[in-house]
Amino acid sequence: MGLIAFFAFIPTLVPLPLMWKYFGKYITQQDVNKVISNTILTYIVFIVALIVGYFITLILSRKIIMRNNWWMLILAIPYIIFYWIITSKYSQFRSFVSSSNYQSNKVASMINNSQIPNIMLMNEFWYEIVTLIIIVLAIELGVIVFAFLQKKINKKKEEC
Image (tube, rainbow, N blue to C red; front, side):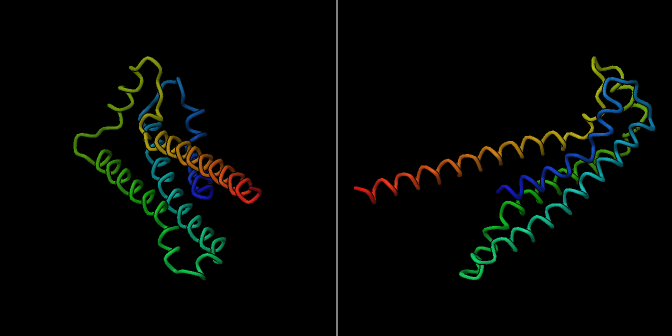
């Protein structure tokens, strides 16, 4: 679980320079196009990070896999879920920017007319990934606490 959170964290770093550069500033059509290409880059980096993360997970779990090959599938489930989310979000994003009604200048003016112009609102996927990372880390923390308590309970049972 920690590996998937780590490898999901890496792609969240891709849009940060644009976020710092454009937050609260006047947005042009070229800025919107830069964010679109940056968002596509974020999706690509995320998919590559998931693939690398899965193979590293397999390498680190090879002792468990040698006992039973079903562990390969079990270890792949979180990666498959993340991949499904990514492909779904990417197809939605591509249909948005390639629709006949889409115009970068209209998006730029809409962002500029908001109270706090934030061009990263075009990349909602970034916010969702940060949220998923927090959820995964919370689950992982729960598993660590459960394992610790289980070990203490078993130790007390052995003493009695």
